[in-house]
Length: 389
Ligand SMILES: Cc1cc2nc3c(=O)[nH]c(=O)nc-3n(C[C@H](O)[C@H](O)[C@H](O)COP(=O)(O)O)c2cc1C
Ligand SMILES: C=C(O[C@@H]1CC(C(=O)O)=C[C@@H](OP(=O)(O)O)[C@H]1O)C(=O)O
Image 1 (spheres, rainbow, N blue to C red):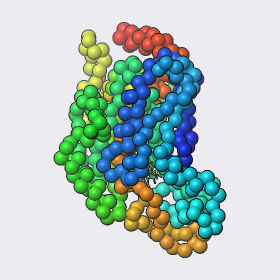
Image 2: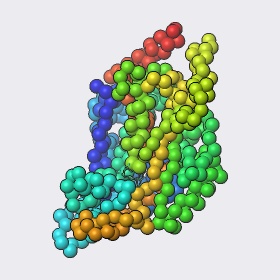
Image 3: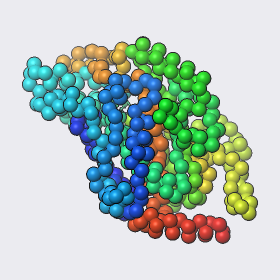
Image 4: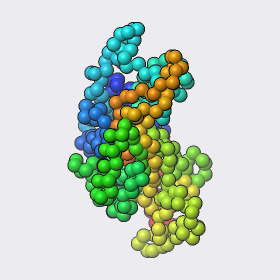
């Protein structure tokens, strides 16, 4: 059975829930490390007041005993502390003129899921769409991805992310060894590899906030320590670069993805794009560069995976854009919900975790076994085969 998960839960409901199926047994989980990833997702300049209310922690309520997976489905819960402020809004059927109607959403926000969701599901309170389309759900995805990350870590695979640009302000290309990129701390939970650029980004976000506006950016994720041959060229839905692209664009507000040099490849000749093949006794086959971002033919090359994601500006604007009242059909400005001005740093953490998930899934497809020991044996056997090739 391949690795899979589902999430459930509303942003102002009691909790988010995720069920993971297909994890091997005997994976030792580090709960502190898991919660650290959740806390990183809450940080970064530009987040709104909600993040001061929440202190995200994962409770594992199934599939783990004595700190180790048993092979059973793993169930994870992340509570919404904000729930207590929303219980009546979420539970009481709105009565005309009653308190609950005040939170009804009926002037959809351009850029959010409000209007499409309302039309599609025939819902006249667009809160029913908003509650699930909110990026609050990404807390559950980070919890799930943090477990995938620990599974990969067990086999020496490392995942790191950083902010490349915000509003066109570019941080210098990091060129940091992955260990330094990973070395995020409590004080600096999200990596911007260039302090001067980070300061300018902060000022831009503050300006946007003052103007009632929002701003997006570009984030990058790197995965190192992978063997050649995860994913496959033989069928479209087995190409791992394609699967990662889908996962990245599935993150709320992500509108683009690049693998390796990405769009730059359209501007320069092939001689400057493709990575030359080299061989040495100690390394085996390797590449002189990694412009391909770790992929050829939908399979890993053995070089680090490098993917970038583009996040559009947050849709909720405190100075709202034009919209239409769904009852009267009159022109109005869009409704304003409490909101972030910029969530690019947080989104870089989300991206690390959705990528970690896809890589872990492909890793288990290749080396699958029911316990980590069985996977290790399969991996060792394959590495021997590659070495002897
Ligand atoms: C970490 C994170 C935080 C977000 N915070 C907000 C927010 O506060 N307000 C908002 O309107 N959108 C926010 N978004 C974006 C919306 O969730 C997203 O634009 C919406 O679900 C519509 O989906 P789409 O943009 O992918 O089409 C956030 C996204 C992420 C990844
Ligand atoms: C709750 C989170 O992000 C939320 C994502 C979000 C949206 O519309 O996507 C809107 C805001 O929700 P609220 O109105 O409750 O403040 C963000 O805070 C989170 O990241 O945990």
